[in-house]
Length: 604
Image 1 (cartoon, rainbow, N blue to C red):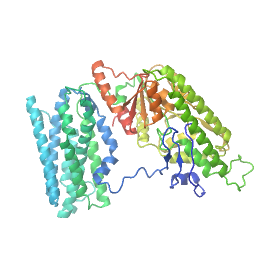
Image 2 (image 1 turned 60 degrees about the horizontal axis):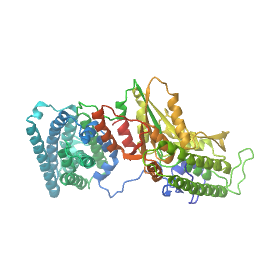
Image 3 (image 1 turned 120 degrees about the vertical axis):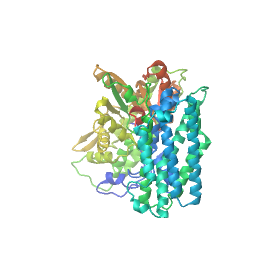
Image 4 (image 1 turned 180 degrees about the vertical axis):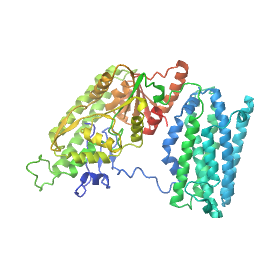
């Protein structure tokens, strides 16, 4: 058992399909996602994923909506090699030459926007931005002159560069999908065209400002980073201000736009982001790049095996909370007669009290167990053997907690169809479904996916993934026992503890054919995942579990943000000609989102 529900809100009105209604209403309850975390509150219905405030301008809203694309751009081989300082100079020269074509189109775009707008202040602002780009072109010219080569003449525009410049210039000339040219004839309508043009330019400015900021950390302690000037240029206050000014102008010119016209802005913004990624990907590398990880592995010789936890790694809500809510919503009232031929269930009042008691006891004992682990002598260096022996305490605790759940009878009488419907409505973390679907669809990748979970009911997991069109996963979890589709309250216990998880992990790898070497990735978020994370060639921690970090640090485990870790590996890759992703290194990588994991493992 990984977490228990602590119900504190009144139960909603009973309805024919309680599970479906629960996920599509504003039913609010509070639960412990894990005792070491703060008390969480509320489950958001599937269609209500953290809405952006209406007061946020269109530029900021678009940047937030397409944050995934900015992550994909950051993880392109070109940017990673540049950040590491190992990018071949010929590749950088090619990039500069292509960027000249890019910037010339930007000058034309600003010129067109300046002509179209009837707002004097906007005209002044756009003119300033155009002058900044002209100055950037002069800087490029100085670099080219320093090299003694006219690369613009010698290097023709490549298809990826042309796709963006053609897209921008077409937009600036009024060729916008969903907009008739005749509608842009009046001065008022032409101002809309200025907004559309900035919608196609703003993401590029913001993206370069973002990349500049992200790469500045790699200049620290580096006296001779070959691309310091480039990084400093885009991280500079001047460029950051230009990016912000472009966003402010887009917001200003978009104030009078209708909802349909703002949708056009959003589409232009998204298209520009995608074309920018393609621009980075099109830069010809003459060196080996460490990412994406799937490219570094040879399907003919290696098998890519992805392992993932489920609760709060893949999901927003812990599955034990879901099962508890189903039990309480469908529980009989104290004065309600139960059919003689059905499994006897606890009354609503008794059930709520039982869940509360179980949750309280679990929370207290879990925290005591973690504190007891941390009272042992702190390791001076990574000590996997002692970590394994110590974690057995946590394993014993988890098994005792599961036994209490079974003995209490709180899971008796749950309907299998209700559980499956709940799984279908279960909210998965943003980007999780896309990641797994991309692996399954790429048959040439030669990859397997295994989900290892403490979840009490594997049917809930299978239903959740199946509803997202993901049917190629191997699920390793506990199972509820059913009689005529009703749970007996008993659990077939397969994966209850960190030891069970790592044993399942090892068994899966042992059962793989010996004709190929496994390259393993494990994605998890809790202490229960710690051993598997360390055993995998690449262990990725998603989220910010304090107990995981405390226990890990106590036994010498290092937690490294994924992108800096990748950049460091790129430096080693160049020197050693080997990426050296290996298990039991004592290093785990932290990621902020599934998009980051996707970019690292699969690329864009």
